[in-house]
Image (tube, rainbow, N blue to C red; front, side, top):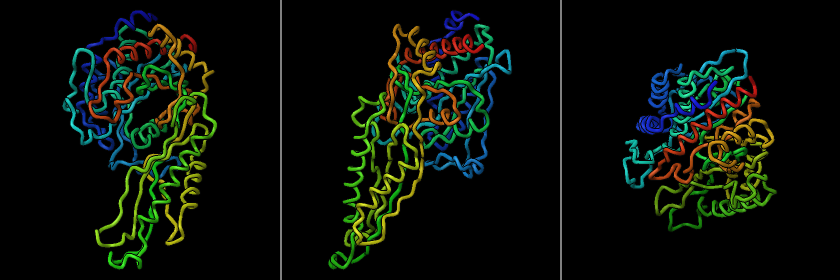
Length: 413
């Protein structure tokens, strides 16, 4: 096999062009069919075998491991791209990436967020860095291996999935069909660092009840807003307590690795009426190594302790995405292999780090598949206005995937 030939087959202009094509698919979470279809088309243009995958949504929702959802959806569609190996019994490598994106938001963009504009060194638009650029980089890595005539012992499979932004249902479904992999890189934006550990994230909803009354008779009512105020303070205190615990070594420098945020409040129906109900929705960070059950119980205890007894107990439900934390031991051979591949490309070994946000890595770890994140710079632009990605970073990611696949084959073949 010729590593040099595969690296030479990486086409910078084609990666930029195809990233822009994929950005133009408005695949906001829940509506990913167009983007999955685009991945299949791009793969076939590179001479790769690709299928459009339609999953049984009802069966997934009934599964005891269902990872939650937030966005409305009537279907779950992904794509699988395969570079066949020589030996069906040889260890197989997976590359994972999501094609769903968050909405463009209400802030003004300098460029149309869905135009996929290309300038000299960047592709612009929603999803460019999170993470359609990474998906295209991985796709072109497989295409370059094929173009160079490289026949690895085992298959290399790209799982292009939906629903990462709201819980990971797409990867959950893909692994339910095929989890026979020895390792996996995910080209999420990581600033060209290797992420070996990530926190979890749980979405919750709380309901505080009060008793309605006319504003002129306020003392005869019980304001749900007043009842919520000490709960909000208790949530802040809980966040401080969670983050005061001993840190995972890879997250020791993060000032707030496990944030707790209340992002939505809804209370009251009339300005002259004592509000009889308040709903709050938020996101709870889960430390690496903590179970989701323990994280839920901790927040529920904090809320219960702050309840004033002036009305019914606060009801907490766990809605939306339920990301578990995940970790691949830094001593795992897969971590060393990817680091060596990145060092060969970048000129020096990238740091091994942890992150506080949830992602699909933990789903691979649930199947005992070693997994790391390695992707382009620009995490600060993910979910933000004027999202963009450096084309050179995508080329570097594609080349690292090629190097990793060849080294993995040499190690396992």
